[in-house]
Each structure stands twice: as C-alpha cells, then as structure tokens.
Amino acid sequence: MSMQLYFPGPPLDQFITCFWFVDLQVPYTREKILPTGTVELMINFGAPHRRYNAAETSFELLRHSWIAGLQTGFIVNEPVAETCMMGVRFKPGGAYAFLDIPLSEITNLVIDLDCLWGRFVVELRERLLALPTVTDKFLLLEQLLRQRMRESRLALAVEQAAISSILSRNNGRSLKALSADIGMSQKHLITQFKKSVGVSPKQLSRIYRFQRVLNKIDPMAPIAWGDIAYACHFYDQSHFNREFAAFTGMSPTDYVLFRQSMLAAQPQQGEGIHFVPIIG
Image (cartoon, rainbow, N blue to C red; front, side, top):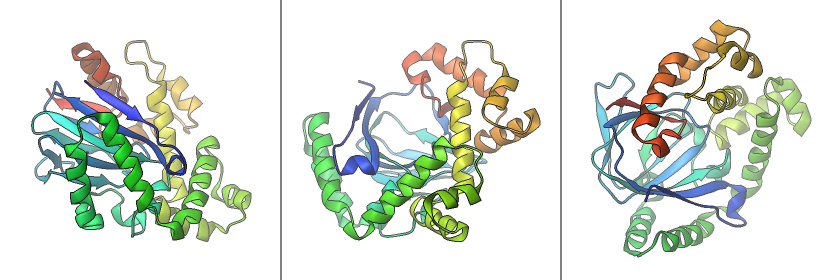
C-alpha cells in the first residue's frame, strides 16, 4: 500500500482538501518537503520522524501527532523507519475553523498537536489506531472533525477561503485590486489573511506561483526555464532563480536531478513534486 485519499463531504469540504493515509518504506533516509501553501495535520501510527533545522545540525523528534503550519520555506524530514500515518490537508483558511489560535502563530512551525487539542488528540489517535481498515479511520476522522468545527469562526474561514481562491486565479494582481474585489481595506485584508491563513496575500501569492512552476516541470523531458519563468510572471530569469532557491534551497537544475534520481528508484514515490530526497 502507498497512499490512499479520502474527500470529506459537506461541511468539511469547505475547509479541507482531503484526508490521506500512507503506509510505506521510503527509499531514502532524509528529504526536503517543499512549501505547498497548505496547513497539514498528521497522526502517526509508525516510527517517529525527525524534523531538522535548515542547516541539518539539529532536530526535534515528532512522535504521535503534529501540525505543520503554512511553510514559506522547505522542511527537512527524516522518517526513522517505516512511514505509517494519516493526515488532513486544509484549504487556505480552512484550519482556522478547527484551531483556537491565529494561524500566523504556527507559520513555519511544526508543533505537537496535543499542544493545541490536549487530551482530545490522544483519544483520537487511540481510536483511529484501533480501527481495522483505512476506510474506517477516514470515516471516524470525518465524524470527529465535524464535531470539532468552531461555529463562531466558520464565516471568517469561508471568507478567507474565498479570498485565497481569488488570489490563486489572479496571480500578479495588486493588493489594492484584491481588496477592492472583496470590499475590504488593504490593511484589514492583510490582518485577516495572517490570522486565518497564516501569511499575507503577497506571501501566499508567491507560494502559489512556486506551485505553478513545480507543476510545469517534467524532469524526464527537456526544460525551457525561460518559458516557465515567463509563463509564471517572473520579471526575468534571475528573479526566477532567486525565488526558486528561496523556496527550495537549491537551483532549478539540482531540483530536477534529485527528481530524476527519485523517479528512477521508485516511480510512484517520485511523482510527488514537493518531496526531494537529499540523503539516499
């Protein structure tokens, strides 16, 4: 088994892209996880993971459950052994309906989930672990998250998800134009974005543009970097290279070489554009 996806129904589908479950042995020991523009919640059933600092000189151990806030740079992750876990991928603004803090407080952090949910997450993991099938786990998680939604924050979460959707479809538009579209001052828009998405509209727009770059790269075919830079609205090639390095810590060419090695070793795993093996 590699990865299974589950798409929850209403009302969770307003806030959550999908649930996922993985059970596999990765063919490398350490990886970079590149920014996705999402908040991810993980419940671990297998061995711990090590999350390293960017210099890879120290790490923190992630054991049972954790949440990764929206990341503006890469994470260095090391599964200690096999990977067996399930997770929740939130839409922009979606996680705010389930947490008691502004999302800006967990931006660029990975923290133990019990720091936010206390005993609830301990009981949740125990109940999920006891279920015999992945489908049963998905259905229970859906049920409990539906109960966990905070009604007082749903309107704001919906508003921010709509703003993020507008932003993703209109790359390069000014903050002034975006705020005019939704009838909100620029200052208030930035404040609301940081609270319920985790970053400013400009930062989120940069991440979305980076996503478009990754999706245009076919590591097994010749790549016209200038064409990609132009299509994704970079000023010039140097601007493109700087942005790529800021998000990945590597050059576009090095990224492709890592992806090629991954595809050669394990094609299915290599399809993940955000996972880059850095130690074999």
